[in-house]
Image (cartoon, rainbow, N blue to C red; front, side, top):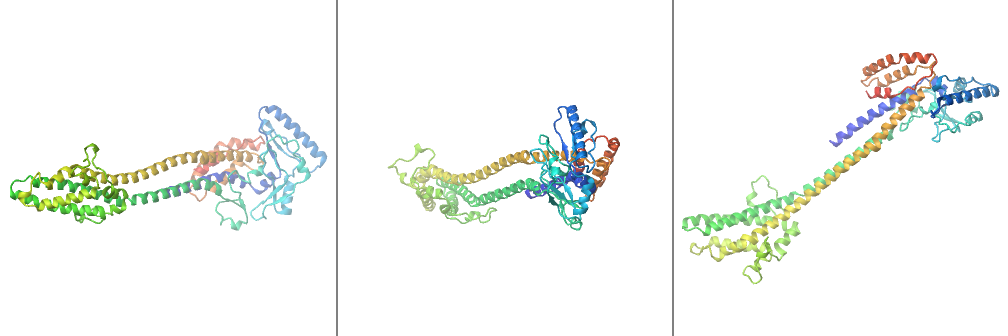
Length: 525
């Protein structure tokens, strides 16, 4: 069962990673000309939304200043188009960076397209270096080019604004592995989603975060099982001894009853019948008692179902050996009724259980061999059974059997405590797993989806219909996995709902961010 849980967890994690990667595929699946165009321009997204009108006016003023300075200074490239609408006023495209035509020229010269590095945590974009990402599947590997002084000076005064670049999505979201860029012929051999000459592979760290705790839990289950099995497997010997101690107590009770019935008989025929039963019971008791002390199988258990050899309790348990051979105490439950020093039976009752058992066997054997005229209820043979065997010996045998009961219960309680502690630890670790692994991962997925949709919203509407592009990418990603019909159903509903939005985008109106929650839902289905 733990192994089945591990396999099922692996399947779920793979499906989760596949659904998460589909959101990144939309960025990597953009046509190469659009990627080159976007990577050569910096898009700064301002988060201060307290006063939209003031921000819009300041942005328009800064845009006019940039356009004027760009026209007077260099005259290279076209000035950035003024944004329209209150929301579009928050996006600025730096005129100091190279235009799409220059990026295409660089592509022809060097075989790679420049990609802006991801923004630092401090807020402003690090313009110290310009990364060159491969434009197609057959290009050279990505290189690094030093920036020009013109691009470095274009970021003055922007340190107070949190900025990000379009190319951040190409560098992948938090926890995702960067797409491996290589030759097209090697893409089918890679395990991942091939898209636009690249292969998007799942993040090993994300898979390990989910699988390692469950794998460790499976290891802990195996260890608990081995320890429990070893402890319970060692219970066969003590249980056999406990079983034999119970047989000895039962056989001793029958021996007392037969001895009492033998001495109270009046006629010789009945006494002869009881004499034979008493002699047989003595031999059975002696066989079981020898097996209890020194191991083996008694004659009474030769054909029984539980035919496990009895271990030598004298040598297996020191407490048992002390009870039978070493302790010099009274074995009665009521210590006030014990024999006092100087009594006839004081010595025999205060030197261990074995002394009393051997004396009892001797007296009963002699009683079964006496003549009928010497068998009396108040005779010396039966007096030992009446005064000693009824309390000291019988209660001492019960205390010896309790030793095996206590030992067995201690083993069972140890296993029970271990299982309960493991259960509590499992519940606690499951809670920590949800709080520190599952919920943060889901939060990162939501954050990445919003971030990617915001970046996709900056694709020029006249260059590409983003919604149609996302639908096509998702359709290709889901192909061959049994979800093509469901993808078409979702895409048809989305196309009908986005008809008005597409018409608005073609007219040049500002685009709303494309939320990739729809993409995540489509991938999860």
